[in-house]
Each structure stands twice: as C-alpha cells, then as structure tokens.
Image (spheres, rainbow, N blue to C red):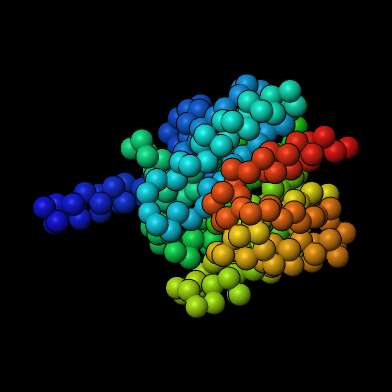
Length: 262
C-alpha cells in the first residue's frame, strides 16, 4: 500500500511538468511564460481594477486554495470600487480539485521556490490576465511566499504591478532563512529594491504575533523602498498571527485605500 501511495504521488507530481495552456480562453487557466497556471475568477469579467491573489508556500503540505474564498470575499466587499479578482496558483502547486499549476522539472517542490524562472512565470501570468480582462491597473495581494514572489516581481518586472499588498512578507531571505533549510536558488526581494518603479505603490502588513515572518522583515524593506522615493508604507496588524493576518479586515482596507488614491 505504501508503494502504491508513493507511485500515485509521483505520477501526480510528474503530471505537473507540462506546456503552456492548450485553451487560452479557459477561465481557470492562464499561461505564464512556458507553463500553465491555475486560476479562479471572482466578480465581473471586465472591470478597471484587477486584483490578483497569491498564496504562501504551504510548507505543511496540502493544496494551495486557501486564498480562493479570501479573493471571492474581497471581490464582493469591494464591488462598489469596480474590481475583479483572480486567485492564482503558483507553479507546481495543486488546487485541491485535481488540477496542478505546471512547473519546469528542475523548479519543483515547495523549498527554495522563489527562483527567477518561477517568479517570471507568475509575472507572465499577471501580464496575460491584465490583457485578457482589459484591466486599467493591477493590484497584487501576496501572502508569505506569495508576498516574497510579488516583491521580487516588483524589481524584476518594474511597472508591471501598479499596487502591491504584501502580507507577512519574508522580504529579506538572509535573516528569514537563518537556521532553516537551504535556499540556494531563490531570489531575495531586498536585492531588487533598486529596480522597483517609483510609480508603484506598496503597502506591507504583518501581524504583531507573527513568529514566522517577523514584522521587521517587511518594515525594513518598506523603509528602503521609501528612501528611494517609492510610495511605500508598513502597517502592523494587532494580535494577528502569520496566517490570520491574511484574513484580517486591514488587508481589504489596504486594497480599498490604494484603489481610492489618485
């Protein structure tokens, strides 16, 4: 039985190595650069403000779908501000419904995931989603590893993202990964600070009780951005933990404030 279970897992993982999406009109999939990433869309098909949600690393295993209901709720809460929301599944992650976002064979796994290839795939998907939905601007809301991915894209693809909401961000991998497993290929958001477009607005939020991505990781990142003239600020969410911060009302309020700003 154990051998059979292992075989099933290997087959499922190998099926994640694939090509771009076959049907580019499929509303549950979008091509990044060379991979096909899973999505869930909430709200109208066309609206000026596109909200894209990125999940964390899910280090305990399981599917990457906890951001689906959060994105759906935000689309309803912010409907008056003319938003559409897309929850994106990062390369190599399953959606819990039998689907998997594809990933290059040497980029798989949940460890050391913020590689240039993986983050470029997400950036490509963001660009295609903006074009597909004819959005005027893009706000990306990333949690934990999704926040790190977003922060890297801010520097590697300057100007692609108009607004970034970074929740529980490990925005500096050097202190964050100290004492953890080896991360040898991942990009560090701090390295790309000098390349972030000064037209981008960044709002970082971390829970005061977050013992994973400590508040100072995002706070110092934001301070460095602000020193360059980027409109960036940090908000601490009282009594929130690493995971509960993503569900906090402060996140929705942050998105609303960014959309309302001139």
